[in-house]
Image (cartoon, rainbow, N blue to C red):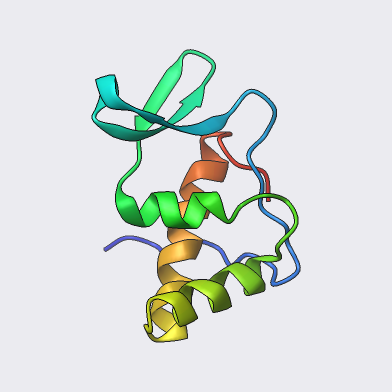
Length: 96
């Protein structure tokens, strides 16, 4: 059994740190998150989440926007977004 990721404050403003960017790369077969000496392929869901991490929108705004855009239960979106963003933050690919 895995532990749930720790919660993210509603007023956090996630953003990509300096030197990390999301880009479309045909050679990599789609969207990738580029960081110094690292490349992570991002699936369509991750791309939709990461595109919203500009440092302007709050975490709560991002979750609400995704729930509305995909007509999905907010609780489910909250769990998925928290897991992705915590994972990226743990790898130093996102600032919360």
